[in-house]
Length: 220
Image (tube, rainbow, N blue to C red):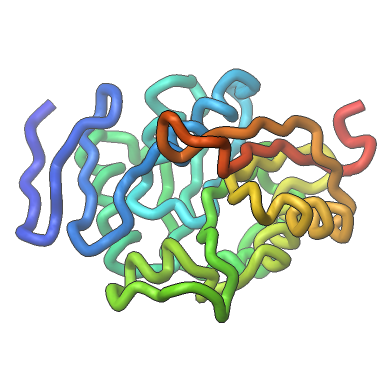
């Protein structure tokens, strides 16, 4: 595979067998994203259809494509520059037949996809609640870290819609917001099926959680 050309605003790294381009001004790949992918991978089958809400530069689609035979993965990214880099990652690795990147606000997806369109919904969303915490002056990092384009209730609502009655939903989120997550899942008719606590940095107490959710009774 030919080494791709990058701009002065980009950094070229590797992600499994693939080239992985990140933006210098954007939010970089972190351990929580890797942990989320590993949390999802064991349950995937070849026939699953996956959507990644807030895909950034496409790390989760690339990870899932590298470790599974899933044929349809859709990444959703609201920031135009970040989505452009995600599309570039798909192209330079020859994954156009398996991965599609859409530059759109995930809150608009009900007008594009029917209910239950995906068997797997994945998201590593912004952790900081709107109106709290410090907002980065760099727009790409700000949107990746803070709930500037929809909060947890919006995310859970659209996830429940996209997963429908039979799909599964996977998130990584701060431990401090676990009770809020549980409340939003119940409001959307979802039930937490699997929960695992992790730490963002080795040697520290767990500060994040991985969660799998589905419709009440949807998985038996």
